[in-house]
Structure formats: C-alpha cells, structure tokens
Length: 470
Ligand code: PMP
Image (cartoon, rainbow, N blue to C red; front, side, top):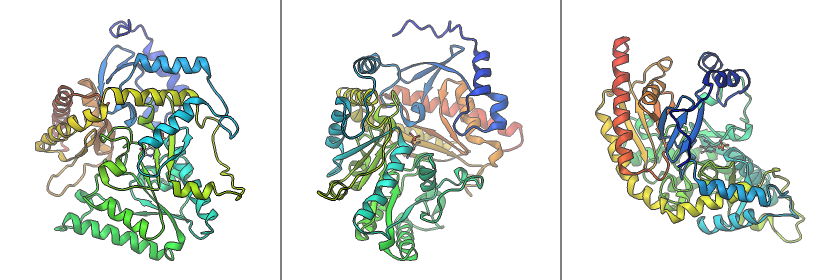
C-alpha cells in the first residue's frame, strides 16, 4: 500500500477540469456535452479500485478500457518499467538493431500462440496492429501473385480500431458518420451474429448460423469469387459492438469458408487475448479455430504501457521471407518493439502465470455470468450476455418486443451514472452497460458488482417512472 490518503487528496479539482476542458481533446468527445460536464479526474489506482481527485473510491468493473488485466498500481510492474527505462529506455527497432525485451517477448508470444503463429510484429496498440495486418495481407497476396485478392470482409457492429483503415474495417454504424470518408470500395460488412436481436422469429440458433454462413458465401460470389477476396476479420466475441457471443459453431463455419476459399482469417483478439476468457488466446482454446493472424494489445501489458502485437503464421512468414526474393515489408513504427513496453508485457505475463489468473477467470467467470443473469428479472433488463470476464447488460423499454428506449434517454449512461454514485464503474454504450473487470476478481467482488448494479438499475427505473418514460 502506498501512503496516498484518498480522503486527503488536496487536489484543485475544478482547476484540473478547466485545463482539461480547454486543452485536452478526448477520444469520442461529444463536444456539446463535454463543454458543460468535462471529465472526472482520476488520480490513483490500486488493484481493481480507482480514486478520483475528491477522494472517492470506485470498483472499476471495466478494467480501464478492457485492458487492466492484472490490476492497477503494482509495485513490481513499476519497478520493471523503471529498471528497463534506466537500462535502455529506447533503441531503434529498424532491422539492424534489436533489444532484449522485444526478442524475449516475441519468443514468449510465439510459445503461447496457437499452432504456427510464430511471428510477431510489434505496434503501438490495437488499431495499429489491425492496420499492420491490413497492410501485410495485401503485401502477402501480391507477393504470391494473387493481385486481385484485394477485398476485405468484416461484420456490421465490429470494432477494429480508430485509424482510417482499421475503422473502415470496423462496422459500428455510430462510428461511421458521413463527415468521414471511409474505405468503402474494398471493405465489406456482413450481418453480425446477434441471435437475440437479428434472428428471424422462430429461427433456431443453427438456422441463424446457416443464414450467416450463406451470406458470407454469397458475398464472396458477389465480389467475383474467392480470387478477389483477401481476408476476413472477426473478433471472437464482439466487444464494443455489444459483447456479442455468436451462436455455437458460427466462428468454426466462417473459418471453414475462409479455408475453403484461400481467404486469410484474422482474429482480432485485442480484447479477448491475455486471459479475459481464461486463455492466452481465445481463438483456438475457447472457439476451436486457428486463425492465420491474431491482433492483440490491451491485456498484453494490462495497460501499464502502450503496446500491440500482430501474430502471424509460418505460411505467411514463408512468403515474406522467401530466399532471394529481395522482399522488404516496408512498414513499421518508431516505437515497434519498444523496450520499456516489452519489459512491461513480460512482467505482466509473468504475474499472470505466477498468480494463475487464467485459472481464476475459468473459476470465477461462470459464477459472474450466472449471478449477473439474475438481473434479467428487472423490468428493463432485456438480456445479460457475455462470457467469463467479458459481459454486458442490455436495457429495453419492452421485454416482449425488445423495443429500445429512445437514444436521447441515454439509458446505459443513466444506469452507469447511478452506479458511479454507488462506487461502481461500468461502461455505457448507448443502451448497454459493458464490464470487463481485472482478472483478479473474486466471488465477493462479483456479489458487490451484481448487488450494486441492481441498485443502480432500480434507481434508474424510479427516475424513468418519475419522468413518465416507463
Ligand atoms: N480491436 C478491438 C477488438 C478493440 O476492442 C480495440 C479497442 N477497443 C481495438 C482493436 C483498437 O485498439 P487501440 O484502442 O489500442 O488502438
């Protein structure tokens, strides 16, 4: 424990908020709201708890932004980062230089990854890992002489990052307002596997999967056949798109279509890797598929340092690395393989192994799912879904018709504001509350989350009734 006393913070909260409002532009800033409300300054983190500048303490059930896997403020992490910064704070990663943490981490990731995914390209985060995959896909297909293989297929409501290319691959309608010009000629979006919302009346899960697989095959045909299709991108469980767990067999069948058509399968594991589902990587161990590429970030360092990694197969490597081809994958970042970030990742993985955090997720995860499901008795809870340490609650105005509340009611935000008051952080995404707690969570903490969220939802129902909305 540090000597920080959250009841005696001594911060000038208002001054911080004013500086922040005047100069700090936040991701996804809604200008009209931010201008008035600003953002809450967070000054300290310990384990699963964060403290604001007024000394209030919150259980952060979101784990930062799906990334705080080992918990905040670990001295061991701070020491590993400091030691590496002191020894070698930076070294160019370009070809003729390397550094020990980067080499060690690449080898470690290869040992944890499925099958032949033995090659690692380090990036600055998840978006740049997806961008790197996109560039490598075209490079690889061209090197093989498959010059027409240009089209990329992903899904509506997927999230793959925020650079122009990765956001073009993503398919969340709210992230695609007309003020932007996304890549649309070579990127295509299929329906997403949300059985609760998208399956036709009376359709079984397996019939629903049949329609999705058929749509994929039809799309390949429509694009002139497999010779024109380069890759398919999918998160094993869709995260920002609403924690969508596809019906049994969906991922395997989509993967089989890729294999049958020489289409690369990219599994975006930026959220699901490093323990969130109880495995180093979820693709094979949770869903039984071996992708050609895996993108990762977040839990790789548990957010202690910015770092992403693209892992790819021997088959792709063999094309890039073909002898006497003169090939150069002209792509990379100043901070690829950053020694301090890689040292943080190595220590983070060591802690997960030593404390058996993956085992904890396997044990506590089903309890979390089960307890959270009890909230479905509340009149505005349409569905509780997710798996292990990646879950969400969907709110509806009418449980029978599944009708949503009007967007301007901001139902997810209302519940999360009420939860904040009770010391629990959840993430609001329109009509959802999403949670991805640190992997250290125990059953008592699950009980706290579920009881507190129940109270926050009940308070929200009372507000809605007072205002005549429910
Ligand atoms: N892919 C997925 C599946 C993600 O959830 C995210 C971030 N939430 C990204 C990519 C982008 O990662 P980053 O924000 O680190 O660039």
